[in-house]
Each structure stands twice: as C-alpha cells, then as structure tokens.
Image (cartoon, rainbow, N blue to C red):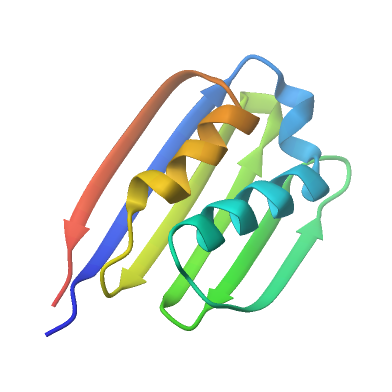
Length: 111
C-alpha cells in the first residue's frame, strides 16, 4: 500500500509583503514538488485584493496548496502525498523563499 501523508505547514514571516508574491510561491512550490519527484498536472493561483493569495498545485500524487494572510504575516501550506515522496524536499524551498520567524509542521498518516 502506498504511503499517504498529509502535512500541515504554517509559517509566520517578518516580510509580510512577500506573502503576496504569487510568482515566488509558484516557483517555490513547483521547485519543491519537482525535487520530491512529484508530477505537476496543473497550477493555479488567485490573488485577492487588497492582499493575500490562494495557490494550488494538482499533482499526480495528490496536491500542494497555500493560503496567505499578509496582514498577519501568516501562510498555511497543505501538502498531501501518496507514495514515497520526501516532505523535506517540498518544505525546504518554502523555508528558503519565505524565511519564517516561527513555524509549525504537523505530519499525519492517512488511511
């Protein structure tokens, strides 16, 4: 049976404006997905006005999503994987692109 993991990764950053950068999020999440060996099927981002965004990578192996609240300096990243994927390879680019003052990572095995 394939491993099914659901990662809830929350970050709080000092550079709140960076949380509005859809191009940076897209690049970071795609880098992490590729590094973990995932197959990206579709990518979609929506920028809210005056701030915040939601982004989603549909993977053959499941999905990665992000929701940001720049006023709070907060982003919620959801990573659901099926199969043997390295979560560190997905999370490390996010840590580099959006250095956190504080973070919380919860790993759930599903099924």
